[in-house]
Length: 205
Length: 247
Image (cartoon, rainbow over all chains, first blue to last red; front, side):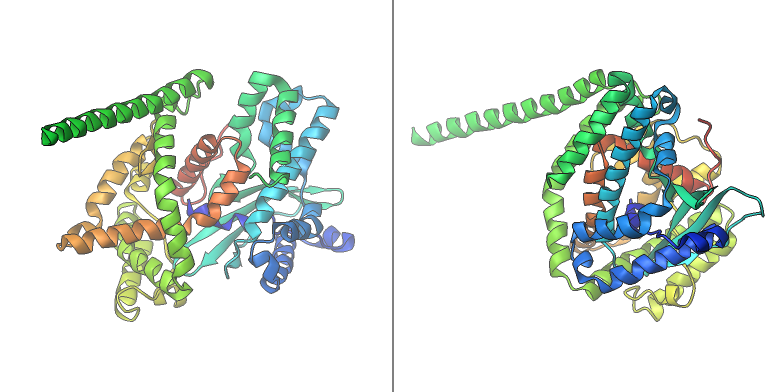
């Protein structure tokens, strides 16, 4: 389960300016954002000592703009996504985003001097879907793979899946979500994620 | 007379304790069975009822183990914790080297053997991970992965007390792993038990930071751990590049 240890890098992707995004490659973008966020975390004693609220602010500011949450939610639902109305899709994506941001911002507070190694990206010109591979290095333990699935959109490259040590943070929810949809429908699923978010917000964990 | 009464009393108490224990056991088994009845059948988890029961047993054990790990984590200075982790990591590297070779990855196996050599000597018995600093990277291999590489199917998902999640294949792999465990060769019983205990605490402490994430991320902790475990093992067998699963 050591792979989970580096979850906090999962959302370490920040915004670069619209101009830069037009030209920059997806791996260059991942690198820039990771470096930006880690620079801040290394200097921020509050985040290091477990201030989740500050970590969430950092993630919302730097990381969120680079994620496609609609696509992430669709991926987590699999076939059930097509059963949802546009209104339901919107609410699902919103609640799922809140959950992921809150959960994994928390992981940022576990940062302990890990470094990131960027691996060469296999990509041909004209590709619109690419896997950016990185590794989290910790002395004394095996490097942990941290990969980002990205797709090119009109406003630049966006992350739609994060894979830590082979575990997709998005599809890991698929069975749970499918089970809920079978039992209580799409609305039941919206309700389930929303009440989980409320619980986390209230600090009940 | 008094003695007899006392004896009788203690006999009654033992009976009581037995009854309470068996009631607790029945409760655990029942909770497992109801878990089975209420959740939809999942083809990748045919023994979900049993597994959930064992999962709750483990959660119970963790009530004791976790505070010890937390105490260790809080009390031991960072260099000590790193040294302890490196020490057990070095012992593990021997078997990792063997498994790399068994999987036909001779280069990695040699590198692991080099790690053991460097860390045991220059790294003072494995306390310092000098090998990583000179570019001999640590790997993670076990016999379950080797079996997977050889084409053995992963089989049903199982959850064991103390050991935790394992597929059927990895359960067998675990048996072989623990047979090959160098700590088993330590002759002094007290030393062996202390080392085994310390290793358990070290592993548990290294997972503390992930606890919170899992608690928050998971709707159902059992499901979340199962799905993550299965994805992770599939990836590990294919050294990080598993074939895509059809949707």
